[in-house]
Amino acid sequence: MQSEKIKFKEKLGYGVGDMASNFIWASTSMFLTFFYTNVAGISAAAVGTLLLIARVFDAFVDIGVGAMVDKTKTKYGKARPWILWLAIPFGISGILMFAAPDLGPTGALIYAYATYLIMNVVYSAINIPYGVLNSMITQDQYQRSLLNIFRMMSMLIGTLVVTTMTLPMVDTFGGGRAGWLKTFIIYGSVAAILFFITFKTTKERVKPSVVQKEIPFKRGVKALFRNKYWVMIVVLMLITGISGSVGSGVGIYYYQYIMHNKDLVGLMGAISIIPIFIGLMFVAPIIKRFGKRNSSIIGLIISLIGSLVLIINPTNLSVIITSTLIKSVGSVPLAATMFAMLADTIEYGEWKTGMRTEGLVYSAGSFGSKAGNGIGAALVGWLLAMGGYIGGQGTISTSAGHVIQFMFIYLPIIFGVITLLLLIPYKLDKEYPQIIEDLTEARTA
Image (cartoon, rainbow, N blue to C red; front, side, top):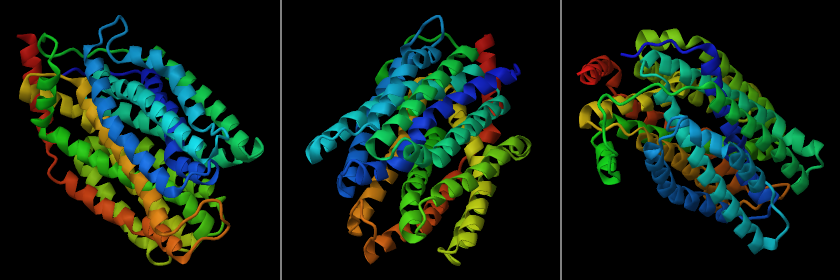
């Protein structure tokens, strides 16, 4: 097994790529539905449909990007050049998405479709190679987990900035359409710079166990579905994406209309993120001792306890804070290991089928995560519409309030149970050392 120790500079450089992503992606999950309904003037139902259509479209984009990454051969490797090529377009796509020029109801909807789809295409084209890069830097399970921890810590910093600073920055820049645009000019510029840092500080080292010709697309896709652990992780990412997107999207509505204080968005965002950030600093020895799967299961049980605490009194701020802290602590192991588990399925697939297809593995994994985010965001829009929510009003109907409470309190419990059940049959942690030994023998031969 390759055991080259990855230097701190490279781990940090790899990690900030996810911070770059989340200056735009976390903003999309957290504020885009609110922005479309309350600033751009688009109905909640239309927003829900837009977000879901974009994810169906993404299914084809992600697989296409994965196939292209597998065929990429440059002096920079197969993943890093995509980060170089698309750093600036990614920043621009985020700026355009939150521009919302005054084009009237129909024009606003058309503009939203165009810019949101463009952002998703560019996001796929830079984020899939970024995910692949983890598997190209090292094959060592523990080093991959450390890389993923740096990734998650950087993601949390980006998300914390977005959560706590977006609304104050929008207000500082005058509010309304202009305030949102100026805020995202800053976010888009920072995102581009951070991706350049990732490109500059990382190195691709991993090679296939045997020299292989270019794998036909159909054979590569068939090989994916012979990889049972890949299927498990993709479904896992789908469910966690839905859960996370619903939680992010409904938060601003819950705090504004149920708690009557939208400024709680920043406070609660910090309370949810800071424990995860601290936990990621200390979780590596736990993962090394108990494995990725077992650590994640323990964490999910803790998170479920936190979700159940909220039922005690869901409008009491102390109860909400306590629930949030417990859920955040419990989410640490899965946050630290999910992408590392996806990377491990590459070796399992190579061992099982003789084909190593990093791009396809990550593209489909990315689709699982993004489809989950899209479905979750669509659920928020559709359920708000079912409850009779109308954007821009000071008060909402009783039915809209009930829908918001259901999404905030009970949906996380449902998704938590599903996630826990998905992890139980995952056994790759135990099988991985023998798989690497077999692949190393094949490479040597």
